[in-house]
Image 1 (cartoon, rainbow, N blue to C red):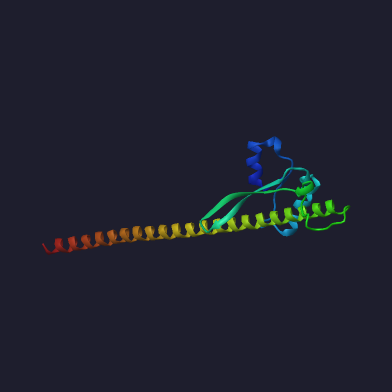
Image 2: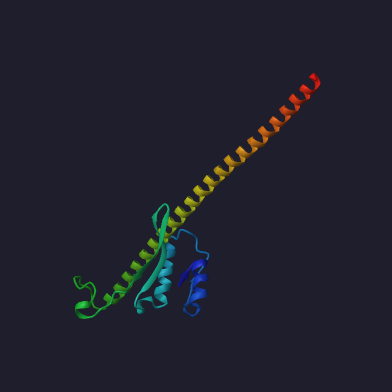
Length: 172
């Protein structure tokens, strides 16, 4: 499942046959309800039958930097000693249902975390871009003001030279 237009466009060029579902026009930042709906759809599509779900997203590092990160969320599985949550007692017929629900909750939480981290990276990037644009606009205003003042000063100097030349011509 691909969320967003940019991710879909990139994957369509690289691996179009691997795309199963896409979600576009998702409002940013994603809400927990959206994350829950997406994880429910993933579970309905059989996410617990795969080796894992890989989430690729932009992660906020600082105001100037964000990195592309990925998370691999694996379903709870195993037999014997490898069985998950052996410390806890479950009724035998409900353990698999509980594990599926828990996996869906973990998937929802990780999706929501990825949405929030991506939104923070996006806002930081926008803020940095606006700071740079404001700085560039200020520099352009300073440059244009200097250019205007030089042209004005040259015009005044020319007029003064003409006045002085005219006055000296009258004296002779």
